[in-house]
Image (cartoon, rainbow, N blue to C red):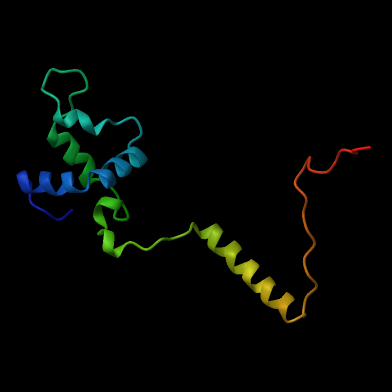
Amino acid sequence: MGCAWGILAVLRLCKRRDDLDADLAHHYPGFDAHGAWRRPGDSGFIGVRRLFDRVERLPADALIHIMVEQRVARWPRDYELLAQILEEIAVLVAEQRRPKPGEVRAAGVGDRDDR
């Protein structure tokens, strides 16, 4: 995170608790960050140092490392490619350089005769 260890670092993390919870759940499944606030000896205690060790090892694209104002809603690469393909087909159809694509029925829909 680029900040010094200590109370200021803890306060910065507390302000972005939702991002931190999401990052830890994604990158460390089963890790309960709330254990950092428990007393030593209590069930589930992990300690603040161990929590910060996990936070420091989060990848650069983790939510906690990106300011909210800098976030860009990104689609996964395959969604983006599919959207571009559909857009190109729509342009070709609109310009009548390609026939309109046929419709694809979902399996099981309309297969039964209703006599």
